Image 1 (cartoon, rainbow, N blue to C red):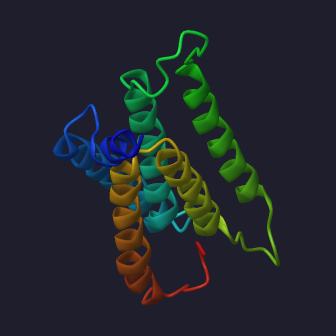
Image 2 (cartoon, rainbow, N blue to C red):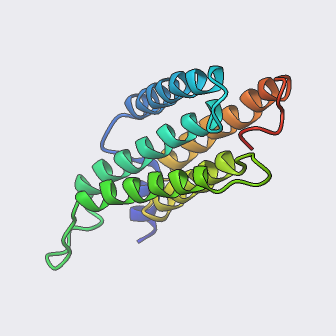
Length: 162
């Protein structure tokens, strides 16, 4: 039993380098969208879009890993990859609803919402035994929050997108 758990901890169907590249690509593309939103002084900016894209990639990679996993190989278990898409849709709806909620004319909490959503994705990945997937996503998340947070703190409106 321990050997199986150790294998699930270390192994992924996709090469880890490919997973990392997909996470980086999603983050860069999300950042590009966020940078444009930031440039236009929209409430959901660079970090929010980057984390949203990264979270979607995590859900997708986990879904791919589940489909190729022996851990759910029991005959009575059915895997429906569409549920992952539904989860991503629900998360985006959550962020969109957050954009409507305002306090004193400012939208707040979107980055926190995206980070919470990402934390949920990382939790799903780790819960299914894909710790390396969750760890890579967490590392990228910390880079996004810390480095882009430092850059954001120097912006003229430091309270926006928190």
